Image (cartoon, rainbow, N blue to C red):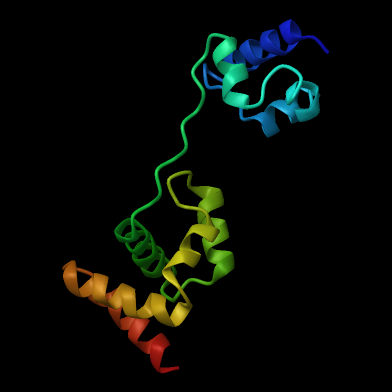
Length: 141
C-alpha cells in the first residue's frame, strides 16, 4: 500500500461523500484500506493523512445541552403518550437525524431522574402540562 494511493482514496471518497471526509473506520469499510495500512507507516493520526490529501479533517461534534435533551424527551413523550423506553429512543434516532442517539440520554441519569428533570423542564416551559402529567404518573408507579 502506497501513501499516494491512500491519499487518492481519501480524496475520492470525500468527493463521493459530498465533500465530507470519511472517518478512518468508515474509510476502511468503503476502501478496504485498513488502519494498519497507514497508521505508524505514513501518519500517526487520521487528521494528518486528511490534511496531506489537501482536505480539512472533520471536527468533533459539540455535546448536546441538557436543555435540548430534555426538550427532545418531552417531545417524544408527548408523541408517544407515555414515558419513552430505550427502544423508543433507538427508533426515534433511526428515523430522525436531529434526534440524539439513545446513549446520549444516559447522561441525564436514571428514568426516575429523567422524570424529575422533565417535570422541572415542563414547569419552566409553558405548554408542557401534558408531558409533566405523564411524568408525574410514571413517578408514582
